[in-house]
Length: 101
Image (cartoon, rainbow, N blue to C red):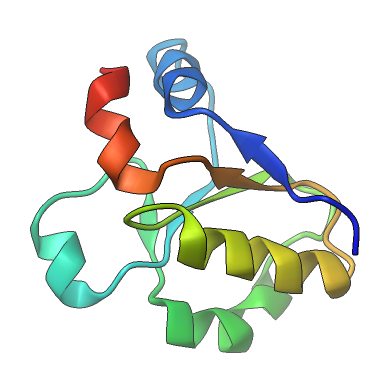
């Protein structure tokens, strides 16, 4: 399996500050989202991703986020197998994101 690309939370913050239009998908549970999320992120719980990925462009950069980076890494691995070429896992997840601010 090819290696999944990772993006550091600091880079995500910088790109958002530069007003880049990023597609960020947060795969955490509803309960986790209630504790806060990246404002620009779209919430699609992990169990819904398999039903929704056909909506996405396989060449578009998509950044996936979860609490620690493990679930979003798994999503990236599956989507890579499905032919997505530019999915990225935000390393460290939301646990690392506040430190990037």
